[in-house]
Image (cartoon, rainbow, N blue to C red):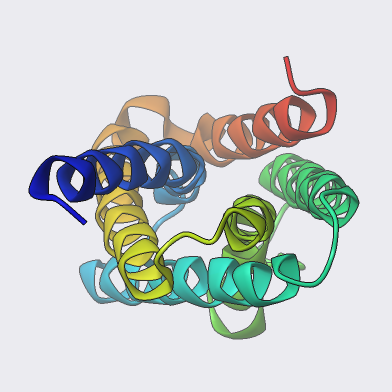
Length: 186
């Protein structure tokens, strides 16, 4: 393969990774509006980056055997999951006390990571059918999504003080809106 074709493929994969990572940025922005410490932000970025490696890898492996239909289903499941998480954040922001069903800690963090990486699974299916370079693709997806998650979390943490007690409701609204976008693809 000549250098121009390889460079073109790398640029294309970076653009795809950036587009897929923007959902991690958006969710990170919403999650950053919760009160998180820098250590938590670091781990959230790492976990989401790892999910953006494993999900497209799984998608690429399955994509070599299946059709595109499963990708659509994964996108809908991701949208539904984000809707549920967004509603939960909005409702819990108006409740007294700190009884949240899902938080970006423990199992809740893995649910968040799964929600934002399901579209990577869908893209992985398509790339598996296409025959893209597996290692370069998943590494690019993971690194870009990790950095975009960190950017969203840090920006959300920065503006959290501006919105006061409504910041978690705003974060939930962002997750809810992104879930709607995934489901209705407009």
